[in-house]
Amino acid sequence: MAQRIAVIAGDGIGTEVMPEGVRALEAAAKRFNLDLDFHTFDFGSCDYYLKHGQMLPDDWFEQLKDFDALFYGAVGWPDTVPDHISLWGSLLQFRRQFDQYINLRPCKLMPGIKSPLAGREPGDIDFYVVRENTEGEYSSVGGKMFEGTEREVVMQETVMTRTGVDRVLKYAFDLAQTRPRKKLTSATKSNGISITMPYWDERVANMAKQYPDVAVDKFHIDILTANFVLHPDWFDVVVGSNLFGDILSDLGPACTGTIGIAPSANINPEGNFPSLFEPVHGSAPDIAGKGIANPIGQIWSGAMMLEHLGFQGSGYQDAAKAVVDAIEAVLGEGNPEVLTRDMGGQGNTKTLGNAIAERIAG
Ligand code: NAD
Ligand code: IPM
Ligand code: MN
Image 1 (cartoon, protein in one colour):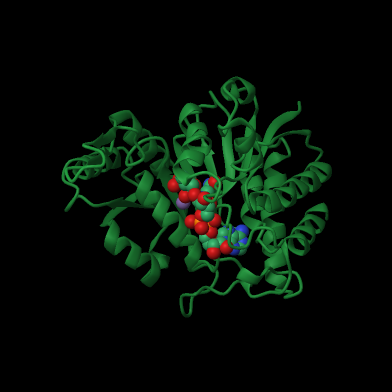
Image 2: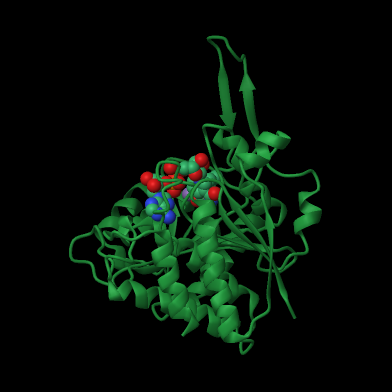
């Protein structure tokens, strides 16, 4: 049966890396006999917003809800639309309305890539950030008072629900259980944020009782960021609130050489709605239009999508593995003509995308 995929490239380098993501998936589909049916949507900050005055059509939910997955590039073009308007009008709506409450973000030092951390080799950095993706610090509760006066006040509440916290913790503990080290680290700040963060810690301790085989530790977010740099080998599965997970999932990939390779899966585990797969990075206006963006974050996100879509034995798992293997093989070869500049090469988006697609084709 065909898997229907909505393709939303978005803005900036989103439109440059997306064709490479699709090319890799098409190569995998051909080799493993998968039926992928791509439908393109032009929802971005430039053309679509300028034409319609909004990021998405009024009936976007109806248009997208029956897709099997959303393959997303990046949105944001602050010169045209303020970031909070473009992102709350697009990506953050998908995460919320499609209840994609898990944001799964692998951080792995790949062969052939130099970590900015001295002496770190592949194998030293290999962990997942599991980020809460629908509530927490990203809330719409708050407002402004006395606007334009000396007494101006702005507030935005952090919202944690028991259901919201427990479901992301459960996912993270389940994931830790499948990993050889069975280790879970919780990101907290219960020394300073005195209501929501002690609550988070309490729920972690409560969930831990159901997973006696998982080793649990926790760090306040400040020292945790330091430990990502000093001891990345300590981490296996790191779970955090929406904002802490956001910060850690740029820092982790930076420790693995470049955020350009980092993928993410915004998952609705129950399958009531489509899940969304996108690179961790944004639209990178500073390099957009030059054709030099690293396409690996997009391609690897495609692999996560295949893994999500397929059941064991369906060919999708094999295809997902072939895509990641191809990324590793091309990086391992270390050909500077092929690799993009963020990895020290002189290649471009297309040379790297082509090399990976050829390798997938076998
Ligand atoms: P960014 O991730 O776009 O860029 C940060 C830095 O990393 C830039 O120097 C950029 O050139 C570099 N970079 C990013 N991706 C790269 C790649 N694939 N290859 C090589 N270099 C790469 O973050 P930013 O500058 O904070 O944000 C730019 C815009 O993107 C903003 O509008 C922001 O809101 C938006 N954004 C969107 C998403 C998303 O759609 N998921 C994620 C993050 C930021
Ligand atoms: C990410 C991005 C988004 C986030 C922005 C663009 C709203 O940084 O996916 O990590 O904060 O979640
Ligand atoms: Mn981010």
